[in-house]
Image (tube, rainbow, N blue to C red; front, side, top):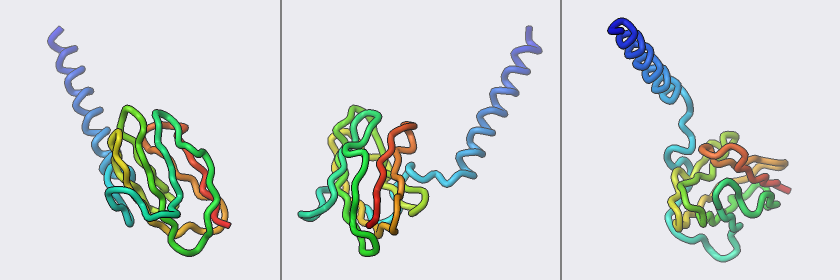
Length: 129
């Protein structure tokens, strides 16, 4: 019995170490803010995005590509979310329920996906035209 406890303890330690190594080696985008992120509402005319539990609203937007686009992002959900684009290397970082943040980023031509890195399937398509 003691051998099993030791083996399980060692395997558990390896899994924890492995999990930490994966997080440390990954980009970690979404865990903290990256890019031009500000607390509070955006300027008038910003593109508004609402985060709810497991979906963005709207699920697709079209913006002018090239010049910086300002997104006003509001979390109407019950848990933290983020608004992250790996392709653009930007993220709001954690946005708490009830919180509003502004992300300003140039959008390239074509479609760029933004996701919540913590909730698979939570995706918005941003088209630069």
